[in-house]
Length: 81
Image 1 (cartoon, helix red, strand yellow):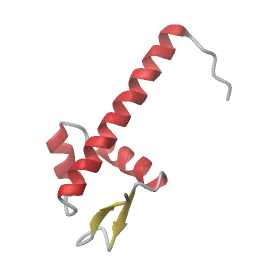
Image 2 (cartoon, one colour; image 1 turned 45 degrees about the vertical axis):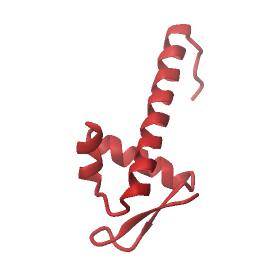
Image 3 (cartoon, one colour; image 1 turned 180 degrees about the horizontal axis):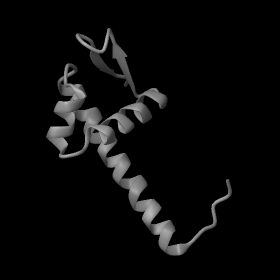
């Protein structure tokens, strides 16, 4: 799929990417201090939806900045430095 550049849309996309980056950094900092935080706790802490947190976690795992140790229940997050 080809995307056409639209100056208005371009600015909106830039703002969305910047917000996603800021949220990802907040998540990394929170998990660095408390590895056992749940997705629900992260969502409540930052006032975001559970789906938004899941999307950010998936992005961070894909980038290799975050890993999950153990099972979903009883496991913890590992921040990769």
